[in-house]
Image 1 (spheres, rainbow, N blue to C red):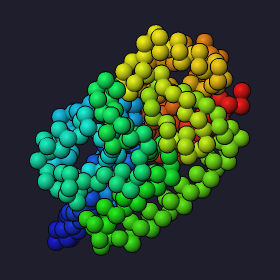
Image 2: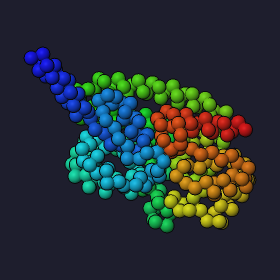
Image 3: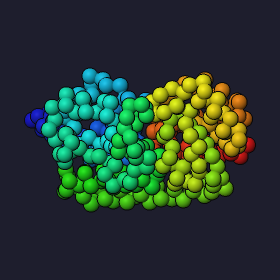
Image 4: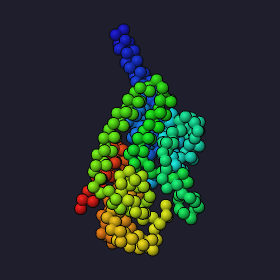
Length: 303
């Protein structure tokens, strides 16, 4: 009898744990920064997966067969928007057969909805490269705009689980307080270098530059998604020398050879910067990623 009682109690605990696990809100984020924000808002009530690991090109996360069942079971899909994920997300959503996470449905969480885009192109002709018709999608490198994304994620969680609204909003506000403190710290760290010019491989950095008072001088790419020509590199080197541009940024998604050559020929410092958490070691969270970016700039400019 005692054994039966113990077994019954044990099964109750196990079943209870299974039920708690099953009750978690399943979130699939396209990129690691959004996944980190979702974890911070959702806490123990959510199970979050990211399609990216951090090292990929944000526009071309490789499509894996395992993504389809993941999306099929998802309650929410969280995306950057502005057509950032156009090369992989639409096909995955269609294959998932999950009506709740299709565009226009409550489970489709486009974090760009309250963002004013930069660099909206006047033309979307293919001769201009891989342009984004709705504007530059790399707003998550501006931590103030990341706060907007966080609020959008929180609102989506409240819509699917209103009974947990107080907890979600408490988590949101706690993270916003931490992020606000870090933004003040980052602004202070970069303030002495206001107006400093820099180039990067791809046009990831307009939002970051605008937020922190830096000058985005241009890209190593000839046009978005188009590799540089010898003539373009020569012109870029000459203009960098004339304008005394001290920083070349290489994102991990791109080879080092050309950025290193440009840095060598101009006397600029080459820095490798992630464009989302996980892009380089020790940047597994959004706060750690932004810390790394800001202090990499500061360290390079101190030289």
